[in-house]
Length: 376
Image 1: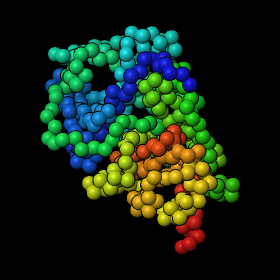
Image 2: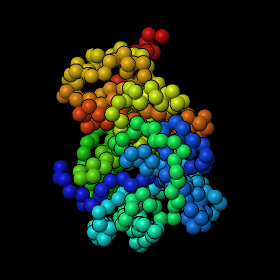
Image 3: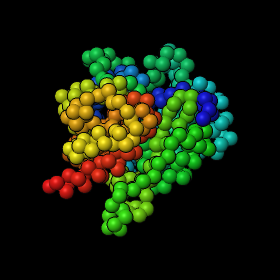
């Protein structure tokens, strides 16, 4: 794996999340996740896009939350087709001219020519391209001047100090019905490299009666360390796969989840639970089998107390003396008790030297559920 970035990527500037219930979403990010509001859309932006928006930020993570003001807007059109979710990912680049040249040479489908938005202390130069992932767009942005001064947005004074444990985006995960055109897009058009791949079924697929499986390919940009996992359902039982289920609930392909990195997952989960955040549960049998799995996978010494992992329902995976800890929030439809809220969710992850994505937990959870059922 190299150390260059074909597009000169610096990192993820922001991702745009289109919602229908704007105030509810704002409250979720600020009151429960600890983000702060840094910018709000100005009159010109709102007239131009018939929408309203705000930026939410914590450390190196920036979310652009948008919602329609009228039915004649790109946000309204998005919500007519898809569930609330990520519509656009913006990457900051070193040199936009070089990035455009590379994209042209590699068959990118441009949505618009280069645009420039200016403010008193800043200029944003950018282009957007289409992707094979439904309506998801990728934007490449060069910033000239003060990075905290966003054209057409007004700075807001946070009502309170940032209180979020999240450090940066670990990865984003895309669900599609087939991997090849998606990872080929990231490889050919965006110059990314293969980082990791896995394919597996739950053991029950051998019975021929039921089962679930997926195939996953992770692409990355070595310099910026941007990682994108791409999942597809796996035959047999294609339609029973959780990936196909997402496709149905989302009304198309899209970003299934964003993983946020922390440096102390146990304390993070305790803090978020106290704020009312709900996580997916894990059966007790998973933790009964965990010591055996740690030994079988050669994980070695785990610094955390396994009783704490059980109490907070945190998952562990790894090999060769390294491991990761992860947990998943309930998806939006479960958090808000409303199916129309969509299937998007967040993962929270802490890495102890392991670069995987928790693939063994898929099998382990299935085995734990089997054991739990056998005991009942």
